[in-house]
Image 1 (cartoon, rainbow, N blue to C red):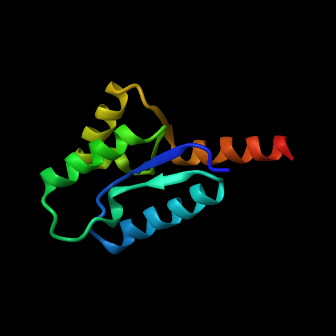
Image 2 (cartoon, rainbow, N blue to C red):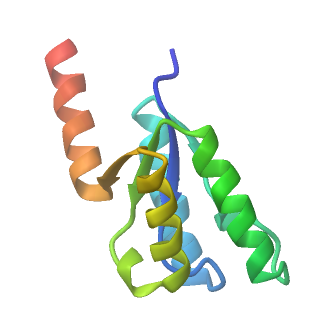
Length: 109
């Protein structure tokens, strides 16, 4: 059974190293039983304003926003985080989210 839908928020998705971080986080979060949405897989060349609108729409559709390490270094991620907080979304840092979810799984077994 799928639990929460999670939006992964992070630094730029326009380079391979950052996309790899998103992919790793997506795999972990999905293995914890959550659905995942992220704009990391948008095609190259999409305009910044379009990415922002898409991020906002994805944030509107999720239960939890999980922030990857280094998200604070991105003005776009900061804007998306402000949007999530204005919408009163549950927000968690990636490492704390994963740790908490693992504890929940351990207790349920």
